[in-house]
Length: 282
Image (cartoon, rainbow, N blue to C red; front, side, top):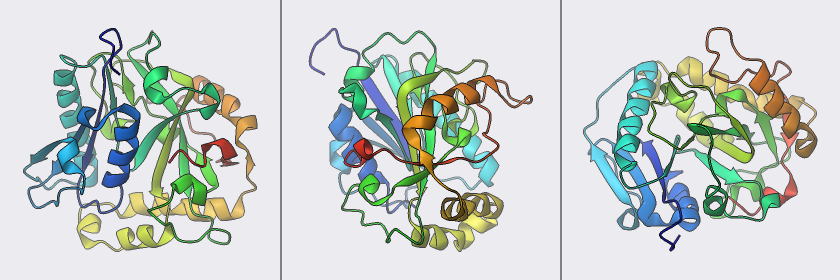
């Protein structure tokens, strides 16, 4: 990213009580886009700084206690405001939760930065959402020092994670970054959003017992997320490459009537085998 003619790309995320994903986030996006272009909002002055915090931009804010739903809205609002300001310095802003990672299909033989130099003819780009989980009969607990996708082979293709995470203009994200307010979405044919919130059963179990989260109304949300382990265990996985195009088309065509600017869920809850070419990326 040295030429003055290249688009500058920034990345934003926000974290609280994270002991697992922030350093992975810094490693991945630092390599892809340069650590100087990463902006991490830490929710609370009680939060420890990531090990590599000196290489990135950290904004530490006073913590406010919200319910889960209000907290999601507040996070999206904060990130939207920061992104709007950063568009004075950047042409593209990527924003999503700390346990999510935007990946370009290795078949494109390009880096994420190179791919996003292409003209973006919409306000945002959505990436196909893959909710990665541990297969409890075939896969061991995660080793954070090794690539996650070297250790995990299955994912639920979920519209909840097909999010408009690439912004080409100032915009306002809705709660959880699931939609852009007042705008349509476009699912890019070569971008994937890997969600790793359920990448390890033991970590997920600890979170389920976190009293702070339970008091904030997270129990139902965590229970729904934990269903991923049973889904991966019981469903017959289909080949990802044979299903990805179908998933993009169906999520684009069939939308919830109450939110037409969000992709529609796939009723069969498909589980895919993640293609081998992704194994060393994350």
